[in-house]
Length: 431
Image (cartoon, rainbow, N blue to C red; front, side, top):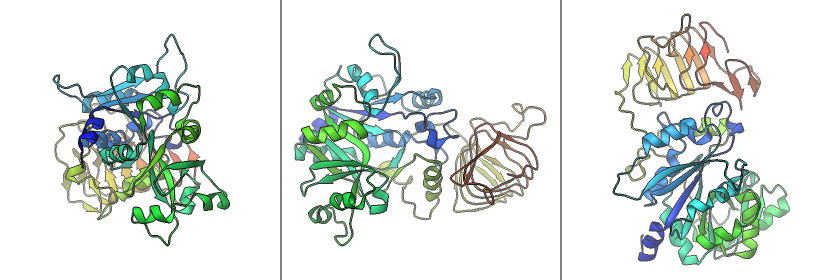
């Protein structure tokens, strides 16, 4: 796939990953951490996905822009991504900071890049790849670079074919048959507008999409800029790429659409997070962590293998360092260092595990239940965040409860019970 031009461009591309804003739609998972630091699939973090995509694409010069609740994200990056001293490759964090030229936090994606532009321009990068830190997908960015060069584009935007209903929730691009973007509409709801935004038949045929079905090109929030174009479009006070920069850029520059046909999920809500995780438990999951060509990198914890004592486990991912004794587990993610005691029944649940072992009880306060899930619990349709202590005989389920609810020890979001990080649920609690 690599031509000399693509190889050259890859070596001269800087990747910039957005560390996310306050992440209010993922609360309470973002109560003490940023969105990209939210655990995924039992042993990873959301940010591992874009970083791994970059590394597999030969893009090993990566900045991560952070702001809110970034301490755990910083620890993860520093532990997981270390390069040898003979390489100029890096994964480096740029946190929001006060400077002589500005004292504001990032006001949006474009403002975040603008505030750090002086760092990005220090080296002779020719292209800048801007990514989100909270999406699940597998994409070789060299394909985007190749198409960008062939089209002679100033900016290439990765787009995803979606149906009419889904199109109402995205920024939608209109292109001509060559893939040049000539219009952008943010979350169009009017059917007359949508009719004009449909992918043309020539593009449907080009990308082997059903020509009898309508499709719309939704922005994936992945942008590949030429150096001089990025400098020019940020020479203003506009805050956001999707809302402000891209519509103006389309009017003045050659903007191209790279159509992506694989699995892609924006993990921006509790429901999306829950679904994306449990989809991984399918016999043939839509995203494959087992593909050796797309290995996902993360912090190597050097944990022991999991131990299962007479348990029944169906369609479940069990991560390292877990101990499951006499429990029934079905359609679950079991995170690192999870403890699940005998007699418990856990179904349709994401368990994030723990940051430490406490089998001796040294870290357990008097009267507190042990770390993990105690005996004879029934848990369904829940997310159990890290270091939770759930006592014996507890029942946790959203059945008969409102779609959204807040209490001191748990939350309900999108009809899913969320037990927050470090929560303590006493024996016999019925949620």
